[in-house]
Image 1 (tube, one colour):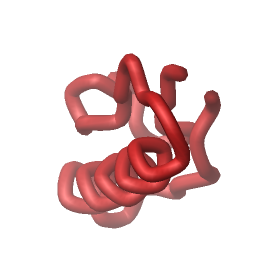
Image 2 (cartoon, rainbow, N blue to C red):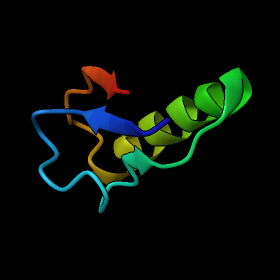
Image 3 (tube, rainbow, N blue to C red):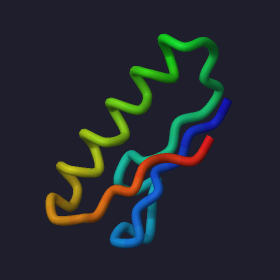
Image 4 (spheres, rainbow, N blue to C red):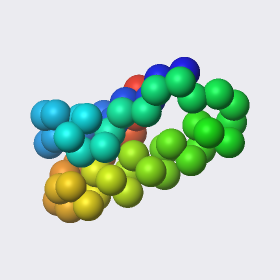
Length: 54
């Protein structure tokens, strides 16, 4: 599974830590979501975060 940040305010998702690859299982998916959101908030605190794409 691949997870990618969905935010119209962050153009380069990888620069913001918004991409995770090779996720396996619910635990890894849950953790990746938390990490992506936290990274995006740190990268650009005022960005709209609309979720992720799997």
